[in-house]
Image (tube, rainbow, N blue to C red; front, side, top):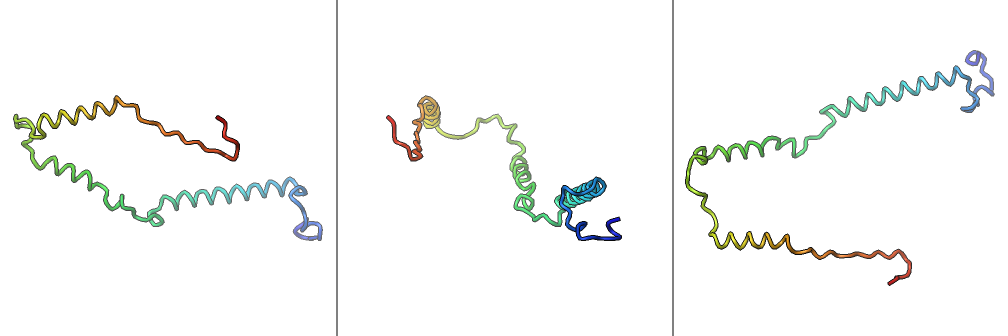
Length: 122
């Protein structure tokens, strides 16, 4: 047995010279190491100890609460029959007209040519 009577040749075996038993043992150890390292990586990534608190974590829910409070500010707002006070009709009409015209124009497309050292062909 190689572990009881070591010879010089037994210490210098290449990967191709391993016996079937030694090869299967190496594969088993490799699988165990990979499974353990994957499990360790999985469980430590889920841990709060290794994660820093972000701005999102610190402000979580503040936007919702702000919107909720703004809606509660005037609970009678939906019951008032008066129209909403806003812009004059002419100013609003000009803005809407400009908005409609912005869709009619074809935007000018810029063309970029990249020459990679060859001659320009026209």
